[in-house]
Length: 297
Image (cartoon, rainbow, N blue to C red; front, side):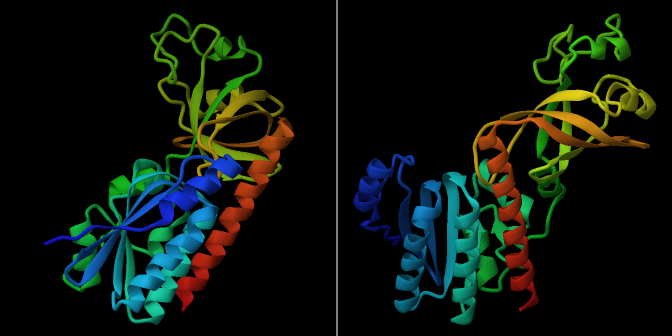
């Protein structure tokens, strides 16, 4: 028989959230299984809940549980501090002869965890049962699939020239090219979708394969030539939900067989957005250092 145990974190967490106005609380529910325990997390996993997760894991290990799976199916948001807490929890379990794994992560969590490569330290599985079996040595760690690799490449940047007529000089309105964002004829509101390859407080680096424009690499480079200003929207998965906006100036361009690679510096960006970008870059650097340290042990 499966017994579900609801911890008493909810009321205290709710009181804290009311005082700090930082969003809904995260609930932690323990589900004992044979030879391992599943911790079901629900809500937003942010900095405030890191000590609570560690306290729960310490309680379980004291009770003799050595293998724990974190079920993140109902976690809507996770930040860098929370991922650091997962790495710390994995280390503490390993030191006690146990293992930590992640099961059924939400789409947001899976994309965010994959982006920083957390699976190098804490394996991710599609079910609680697969996680439990792997921790007991009954299954090998799940290899990265093509779907996982695509998720890692889902850092989208939406861009368009500040001069809205510029796209019309390179993309013929007589063709059936549609706006890839809105799905209608682009007119003067054309948008391109690129993939960010780098981001810091100074600017953005991204690649673009031309989408459905039919442009050659040379023509793409002409559309986004040096000095061109572009309006952009992009995501910071570790810090914010939704899209941030900024205007960038193209500073570098490289033609490739499958498209172009662009370097652009921020020319108009809100202070809050720049601070968020800086924090994002620092968090990524910290997490990668933690991951490198963990994999070297």
